[in-house]
Length: 589
Image 1 (cartoon, rainbow, N blue to C red):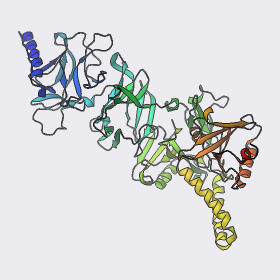
Image 2: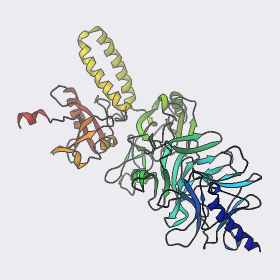
Image 3: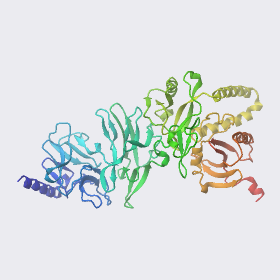
């Protein structure tokens, strides 16, 4: 009799949906949802029902888009425990818990509230969120339970990714094992609760990809997370919660993010109604250099036809005998060891445009300024670097890193300034002497009118250099590389980006010295890049002398030298680009 009453109730529910379509977005304690019937959200955006994948006969309770012809499942209830036949029934039991029953009334999945329940209802919202709430609850955002707290592989607008610090509860994306198997895979994505939180993708228990910490406008290691016309986003970190959330700017836009075990990617898609298909909007990792800690401590990955690891300035490979992909993860060590006995022997070098290091061993104070941050780091021998926590409005807050700096990378966009602890070298004293000379020259200029022309040229060159540095297209002087050359120093990464990784399509010509490429800097300026052959017999000192000589030869009929680069075996000169060719092409045809 009990089985008959249960079946009769399910049949009544089936008829009830067709007669009262306005109530088809919810069920009460006197109703149930059986395999073959669906809940549809109020405005028809999402469906809750039973489905199978591929050729499998396993049945799952899930949510998918209602108006998209390609069934796209965004949430699965019983992904760990499929039902083997079509006997599944979803209902509210007498205690107000939401239960999914299979044959013989075995519980395949359940959800309950920690609060006492009166008259509960289960409702599918137009956001794709399945909620359990009191029927007479006046606050539309007050839920006893919600599916948004238990995501599977898909991140929907309005869904928080992160932690409730009051309860220790985490919301984390976990990939399907395969397109035909919704059970949890190894790839997951969530927020790591360090002192300086950041979004991390994990493969099992190992870090796979890292965005870097939030800096007020984005993540330094996730160039795809930036202002756009599709969705806006926010990162919230306070004493109660730490989470990342996004919302669509236009309600007509359908977008979702997925953690994909097959491709090992975080993928964002947008639905194109005209083409009736999903198109990728962004992916993470963007390239192999985004893979976590590929180059080890103090290593910088440069992407080309294949990734290349180099030590940042002031460091050398830990494995000195060889430096190949098998040794990259061993990282780099300092060329000159630090001494903590004398603070006068310690300084900091500013690195521009970096993905900030792994924040596992970090410390944060959001009320300190950058100068206070420097002093704090200088006074602690274990502090290896510091930076602002927020780069808006000139920068604010203080973040310190202790121990080796892991998973850093120079990036074209979103990169941030990082001040790394270094031994004080002769460059520090030379900089002080230069400042005295500049002051003396300025005094002479005020007296001697004839020096004004030279001062104008020097000032113009300095302004150009500062402009380029502010835009992240040149680096600070490091280890005395450009201390006497009086020209901007461009990093190899910036040059590689400008020339499309020294693409053959950008090649302008070649000769015994090497190759010349056309490039475009981030501000749109066109440049000509002379990349000296590594087979050239010209040494470092000869190259520097050449740079000095060319820099002094400034004439309106000569191509202007804009800067240079010295990294490892690479020696590069950057000239202004002549779109009509040089003068000799007109003289000699």
